[in-house]
Length: 376
Image 1: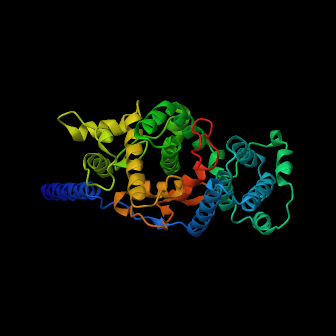
Image 2: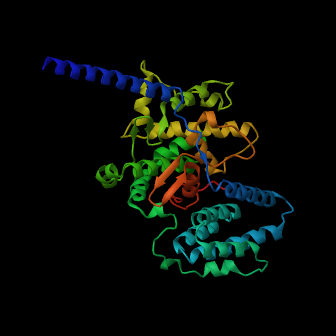
């Protein structure tokens, strides 16, 4: 009996030591960024880049005093042709693109919203053929009037972006709307578009809700609240402690490529004697998410500032911003052909990259009344 008891004690002691080693490794891995992911390049990366190049051409022509009317008219015609094709599948999505165009008169914004749908329906051969015909047609059919005649009241509420048809999205949407004031406050203070903050927030929440479905059904769905992580990634924005520390440090360092200027140095000041606990409390407060959004806003703004200072303005590239938000500071290397990608997000209809899902939400038209588009 004593021999068996000693064996049990020995086993428990070895197990405890191994567990402590495991926890220590995990702590240092997170603290020193070993867990940061470089991410995978999205399968549609080339299409994102091609569309970005087209958007640049549209922007240059729109800004020129001797605008190329023929080019702009061709883009308008193609876009209305594509909206017409989208309307044959979902009047809901067609209406959102059309009404956004009516409000903004932005051909570049319409092109981006259309691309989000085209990529989502990449396996629909008949639809893709219609899109190709829109791009290749030399006819000047009055597609604008055709779209204007659509009876949008007949839409069945089904969204081409299938995640928006599910209970998880309904809970997330309600949670985000509850935090509207805090998100706008953080964005306006830092000087970054609130919708960009929301794009990364939405991806984090979709990932959390779809990876913890039982918890979602029992807790998040009934209360219509956002998931608040308190482990490796912290708070509703899913920011790692190491990233939060780096974000604070860059604010104070004029030599950092992420430095935002003297006016921003005190945005994330910690005032208590226990800064580790204060930071943790700020990021994981389940009653007030403001600091989580503020850290997210500063983090995003620092990355945008780094790229702009290097000569590459990615302010209008939510797919790149989302990718960089996910992969972290070490992977943020300004260049002329940034890649879309990041962690794989598994939700009900398949896998997405972090960056592609950020793009899809951003240009889906969801929550556009509350977090309107920044027009380039």
